[in-house]
Amino acid sequence: MADHFPPEQGRVDPPDMVPFEQARAEVLARLPPLPAREVGLGDALGCVLAADIHAGEHLPPFANSAMDGFAVRSADVQAASAQRPVALRLAGEVFAGSARLPRVPPGGAVRIMTGGSLPPGADAVVPVEQTKLAAGGDPGSGEVLVHVAVGQRAFVREAGEDVREGTLVLERGRVLDPAAIGMLASVGRRTVPVVPRPRVAVVSTGDELVDPGDPLGPGQIRDSNSWLLVAQARRAGAEAFRCGRLHDDPGALRKGFALAAAEGDLVLTSGGVSVGDRDYTRQVLAELGDVRGMRVAMQPGMPQAFGFAAGTPLYGLPGNPVSCFVVFELLVRPALRRLAGHPDDRLDHVRVPAVLGEPVRSPAGKVSFLRVRLEQEAGEGSPRAFLTGPQGSGVLSSCVAADGLAVIPAADRELAAGAVVEVVLLRDDPPSLVP
Ligand code: AMP
Ligand code: MG
Image (tube, rainbow, N blue to C red; front, side, top):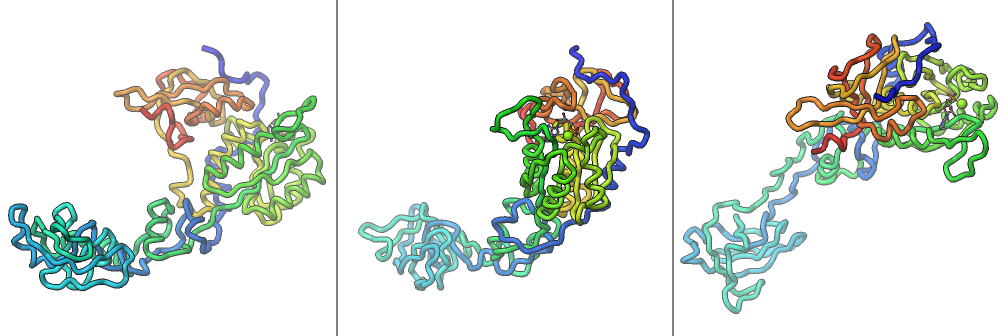
């Protein structure tokens, strides 16, 4: 087996590490949902509904035809059959949207399209397939031959049959999915009260960073974290934007963080939260508010910072891209979902049991989150988890191939192939799980 784990020799973990669950709880305890507001229906997808919604009108609003056919008096066609059709006099036409409705007289019929309002006099619809226009007849006059008997209200969609005015159609707390958006439109809502999507301002820190597309000088690397974090935040349902790439300079950091705090409901920054000589992030953040560094007993992603800068919550993530990725999915995502009004039991990614396909190692005292690919064998219960490659915190390709994060508890130093672990699912549709 290739050794996918970075060496641990000589590494001394600080004594003040916070257990993962405690860090998560401490962050969430300080983040209430954003205040609710009314948003346009076009912006509401994925938001959490902030109030119960009762139908303001009947759906459908009026009795109408479920078929293209003929509106009739059912009593007139009681004796109709294929052998002995009944002839009815045509008395006009009704289209979807017609407001002026011809009356159906005894012995008469009105041609009607799906969605057309049931005209006065009619109490049923005969589908066009069960009729034949009499020779020489045209759609608006002449005669139609009806080949079938229909009961009262046949093929009629009654007013309020889907939803009656005043009914509770959507409950507060539910996520507005496409069906819910369709329902809101159907009952006449143009706007809807929701917990808004959090606006996330993302900054990167580091003298070594250059944007993709710009020339790469000696010692420089691409700023990937800001792009990564914006994408992760959007996938988590937030509105996110890049808000500056800051140099390792206290003055620049001060200005940059203040701007980001003014622009966002939450600031994400990466890099500089560790203990390097130019890691000013924590120092500057402590000046701007009560942002404190924390060492979370997890791997990757131990050095982090959280607090409020100029009144805005701010999460400081480690600079290594894999650490950034993992800390986001496990700690920042629930924080964003809390801001967005999701209930406590829907903050985190779903976890599924999986069987390790190979042995793994994990540092003592920290919970490890290993990037794994899942494979579902036909006939096996749990999927099997395989490492996506080297697990160093700079190896972003390990994330690209990952369906999930295998959780190796802090107490375990190694686990053999065949051990059952929990896997945090990162995708809704892991490609390797789809048959
Ligand atoms: P730091 O936490 O600032 O010491 O950074 C740790 C490592 O992550 C260093 O190798 C940095 O070059 C790298 N890093 C920091 N920020 C970024 C970024 N925005 N994109 C890619 N790599 C980064
Ligand atoms: Mg740095």
